[in-house]
Amino acid sequence: MTDRLTIATWNINSVRLRLPIVEKFILEQAPDVLCLQETKCPDANFPEAAFRKLGYPHIAINGQKGYHGVATISRRPLANIEKRGFCDKGDARHIAVDVAFSDSPLRVHNFYVPAGGDEPDAAINPKFGHKLDFMAEMKAWLNGAETERPAVLVGDLNVAPYEHDVWSHKALLKIVSHTPVETELLEAIRSHGGWIDAMRRFVPMEEKLYTWWSYRARDWAAADKGRRLDHVWVSPPLADRLKAMRVLRAARGWDKPSDHAPVIAVFEE
Image (cartoon, rainbow, N blue to C red):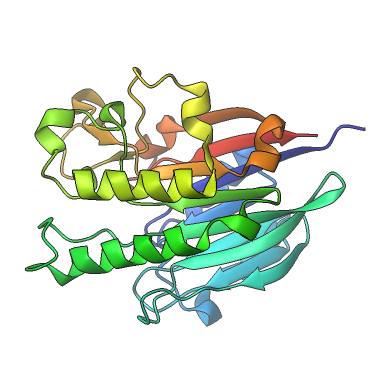
């Protein structure tokens, strides 16, 4: 019997503020697992009851007041929950869980990488230095045993790595999220661990692919000055089970939206 698993990732930019559109997304798309970033909510205040009511009783949270925060909610049981710290900051930026899939557990990493501030120079912008240090720790960890098993890495990685992951490669080369030092480091994390870019498996490199559109644009859809900041990576043992991917662009236009759109990946065994 075929097992089909859908995993969605979405930077929600405050889970309590945007709970109505999260509920709308769940009712329309019904992913098996939903990974949220930038929940901006301490664990005690996370709206667990709302998710349980929607049929998602399994919830793993790593939150903090007002900033950052990640949460993985699921219709399937979650096991081996891990909250990894980075750069000795105490920030809530990662949570990993095992989800039952076919005959083996599937490791799901949920990340929210630091944005890095506005100036792409670590010497004068500590936020950018923090981002690079955070990514260096990711590179040192996310290989070997982490990629020798079925695993998915999702989240807002805050880097648009390829030329057509941004609306203008030339205009954004000196803009944080698309500078060469960031794009090369993200690619090093991915390639060092053997991770496969699930989104680009379905969208050719020469085609534009975005998941984020700034709030600053008067008409975000017409301007379409997007970036692909949200990602889905799969480990080599899972590659053949990856069957589909899509960005739900329409969600960027919902009432009181996040500036990110959800990404949905489908796996079958």
